[in-house]
Length: 162
Image 1 (cartoon, rainbow, N blue to C red):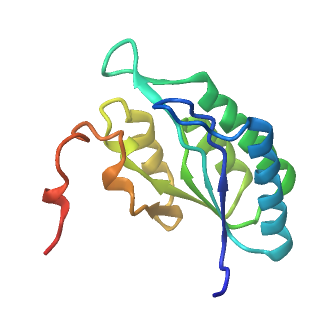
Image 2 (cartoon, rainbow, N blue to C red; image 1 turned 90 degrees about the vertical axis):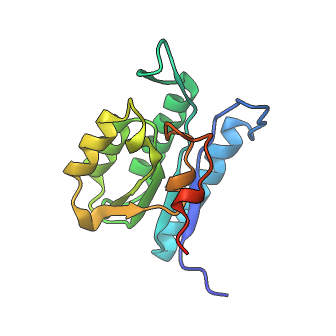
């Protein structure tokens, strides 16, 4: 088997009984992965999954503080360890501001489009998608099962193609 890229990221979520690795350990692994990606000139797929809730109303998307902490640590490590021309697939990001900040720095940043754009509070992500060149947008395979979709709890049979 040939390695063609590196998958990494940070996950500070603690909801639904999840027990993530300590933040320091995650950051150490992230930095090692980013250094390896740079040294081997391999593309890197980065995920920073979020936990969001509808607070104080269903039409307002609330991003929990630990998600913002993870995105801040992720951005800082990327700025410090990767050159601006490195190929990056940003798979999941909670805030439009983080995506914009990374787009300004990294010329080969490809943004994964997820179910966030279909959430009733996803206006910022929908607007962002129109500002990203089509050659820099990736349609992710897990987009249809994203928990951000308004009808997430319904069956996905209607999405199947026979």
